[in-house]
Image (cartoon, rainbow, N blue to C red; front, side, top):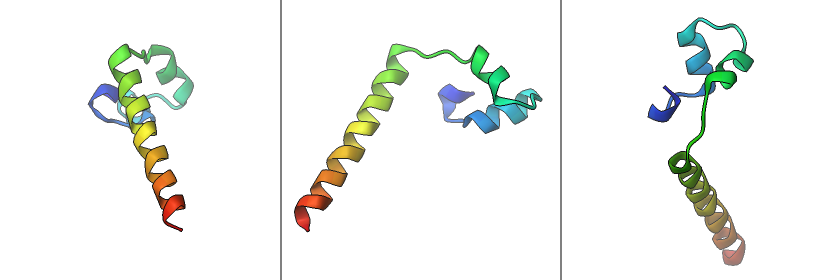
Length: 55
């Protein structure tokens, strides 16, 4: 579910779990998701730097 864009809360509710810890135990990361997260962070930082430079 997380790979398709669902949040941790979405996953917990759908699985019928009451705590996020259980969902985290079964959640795995892979290189593709890591690079997507890194790219998203890069875009966010770059945008913030541009906004600072414009001031």
